Amino acid sequence: MENSFEALITTYIENKVGISENFLNTDLSNNLRQNLFNLQQKSLLTAAGIGNSNLISYDAEIRSDSIYWLDKKHNDPFENEFFAQMEAFILYLNESCYAGITGYEFHYALYEKGDFYLQHLDQFKSNPSRKYSIISYLNPDWQESDGGELLIHQLDKNQKIAPTAGKTVFFKSDELLHEVLLTNATRMSITGWLKSD
Image (cartoon, rainbow, N blue to C red):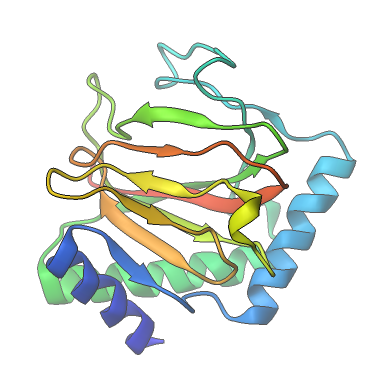
């Protein structure tokens, strides 16, 4: 597990974008994906908003995915396993990089064919608590023709990242503009933020 943690941190230091190809093992990725399918079947996903809880708005011309917030109160075994792994990563990050992370929040994100999310930053102007964005993908057998890549805008060169199962991406929430390109197939992830309140 520490190897995947170190991969995230090392690649982040090198390129401002940390990537670990196998941060989630296959079983956990599959089980979380099934959770997301089950939530969809029960119509429990909601339209994703823009802005924080006090200033939230909805505009499908900017963002068209659906979400469901993870919560320890659900006591779901696979979400609990995910939380435990993220808590271990936060401990490792704080001890090795003095990051000062004190909390987190995560939601499932479902992009169906034709969905997208235009260029944005993840940190709110009115609330700087989100320090790092962290995204774990749940899509097996992803093909380039499926679209839905994460496009990160950097000064020297934009970076396009395929949302393949098990991969986790990590970057500062207030630093890098990014977007989700138009999806041609169902795209699933757990998206969240490491926070310092």
